[in-house]
Amino acid sequence: MDKDFLLQSPTAQELYHNHAASLPIIDYHCHLNPKEIAEDHRFGSITELWLGGDHYKWRALRSNGVDEKYITGNASDWEKFKKWAETLPYCMRNPLYHWTHLELRTAFGITKLLNASTAREIFDECNEKLQQPEFSARGLMQHYNVEVVCTTDDPADNLEHHIAIRYSNFGTKVLPTWRPDKAMGIDNPSTYREYIEKLGETSNMEIRSYTNLLDALQKRHDFFGSVGCRLSDHGVNEFYADSFTETEVSNIFQKVMDGKLPTAAEVGKFRSALMLEGGRMDARAGWTQQFHYGPMRNNNSRMFRKLGPDTGYDSIGTWNTSENLSRFLDKLDSEGLLAKTILYPINPSDNEMIATMIGNFQEGPVPGKLQFGSGWWFNDQLDGMERQMNSLSQLGLLSRFVGMLTDSRSFLSYPRHEYFRRCLCNLIGRDVENGLLPAEEMPFIRQMVEDISYYNAKRYFCF
Image 1 (cartoon, rainbow, N blue to C red):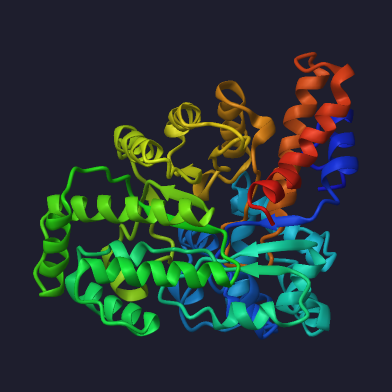
Image 2 (cartoon, rainbow, N blue to C red):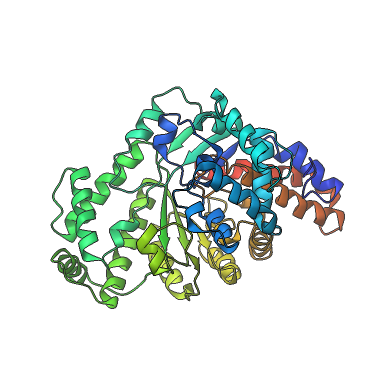
């Protein structure tokens, strides 16, 4: 893992070292805790920083036969770290093996391989360095040259931490992202009613009807914009584009608020209506809407009851989304209210569908108005990233791609941007070396690498 890691040709090396490596990072989708940034959180140990919420690592530990006590249980920090060190050699060919060593090298300057024999030494060295001021939450973001971060935030959040960061002297922009998933969760009436009460309190209004709900969401949408929000994000299993009337949707909302379980058809109508309203709000505000779609979540009901969501029990789903996606985009486009849009399929079998779907709704003056998002979740590894970029290259314009994001809860995940940039430069460098791209166009190719690594995102989101 030297300076030319993943760079398998002289052209790839020149592109990365001279044109990609030093560019700032725009991390336009992540799950960092804004409270930790506002308070410049200091980490008690490498275990807290590295293993505290990383369900990628949790899945690997379970696959290696590690007892849950050492994953999410009450084992000590050292015991948990030791189990991870013992597991890591078994992760060869899993991206965790590369990410782990990139993070050790780029954050802590540690070049030794992590395994059972080096675990104690590396644990102690990391913990010693974490006591230094530059290893705080903000310090790590500055270390990695992070220019912009967009967190993931519910409409009912008061954004107090974003506001505090905004008026501090921190050089990195930390912006909220509108994530209204809970407003669509009518399939659990009791939980939904609690959420609506919370949303009403934050909005300083009573929500007794569907019209009230839209008013509250618009009020919060406007507030998010005032705090710097430029993007929405939606985590959905599938797209919804059912036919409905306003009366039907209003009645469904009232039914759920009365504690009655809606039918599957009613859930589809309600979510179809709310997704359209959200798209209209985003377009009027000049935001970008993002859709991360397709996962099957919380498959293990026993562990869901024990640990809750986002604990490593999700997988790739196989929904057929193309028709509903097309109808959803077409409806907004026909109204003149199709915002800039990024689509992230979790199932790579959708790659070509997404790459061709976005071409149906591209229009000036925005280059790449609709984007095929970078390899997401189970696809943010070398093969997944290459497949995404190959599909986009062959069926669209790779040169207009807005590039990588971490989608992470960890302050040590920024090397994923480096990993992506190395992959990008190797892919393009290989084509130049093989005569598939013209060497006489190297000035344009160099600019294309810089654009995909940084400038396209900066322009697209108006950061």
